[in-house]
Image (cartoon, rainbow, N blue to C red; front, top):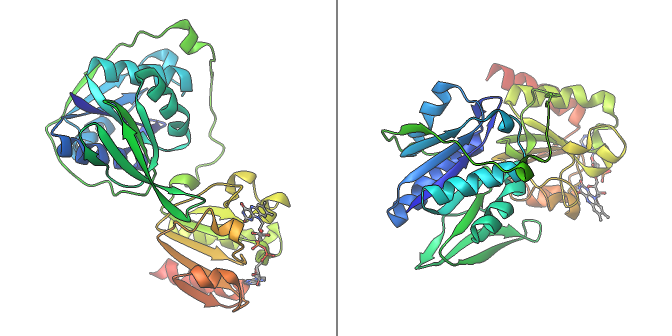
Length: 321
Ligand code: FAD
């Protein structure tokens, strides 16, 4: 038996969340004394493939079919389930990323396995009954979910576990899957990246701004701070509703839930619906000119001041840091 971890890449480079998943799978494998097999689908550079051994995979299985060049939920889930069966993996690990959310339930259904999506901790095990922890009720509570049965699929929340190094002498082998026409009924011919910016769901640092920025013309300084810090940009709901920023940047109860190490909130009041999507951030820094702004109640650090004076100073300070 083994643990299979599916590792996602973007344009041939593995995502940070994929490395976190490998390291997590290694820790699970160590707990149950099973080897860890990593699975990569699509074309990935040789050096990237070899690097997976650094995070604890004993074997890397590569699938590189022309039909799988673009991500397809149905086809990728079929391949992962097929490989899991062929290597006798009772435990499948993947990242709870945008695509992971699409395929984890499908893999679980195909393998007749329990699904633990959004895990934030290593499982506790008692025979075939495992429990994982995940956030619930918009990050206000931690739920313990029980996964019963001999098989389980665990989707790990990005940024919830470190990608620790566990160097192994990993072997690499390729695998030819049996794809059925039904798996390939949708064909994505091409995907063009609209931006090279840091991906918001996975970002370690998020610079987020609200109505306090007054208008879209003032976002250059928010973006500059994000660039200096290597951060993703986000915004409050009214900002995206007003068309100042794209909807993909809206965080909160009705937007994305993010879990960065550092969340910097600029000119955002801290309404409960906004906090619902950001309160799982490890450190929260709030910049607001109103000392009574509710956001300060959940902040680790706060700056009471006008964003138009504070941001240029922060940018300068970080540039020279
Ligand atoms: P405001 O509330 O207008 O706050 C602006 C802040 O900027 C104020 O605190 C002000 O003191 C500060 N400020 C002003 N000028 C400056 C300056 N020069 N320098 C520094 N600070 C300044 N909101 C979300 O964000 N995400 C959601 O997912 C979401 N979902 C919702 C779902 C429902 C069902 C409902 C009813 C609401 C939802 N909202 C959501 C809206 C939410 O209730 C708030 O209205 C919204 O978050 C407020 O956005 P804001 O903080 O940018 O604006």
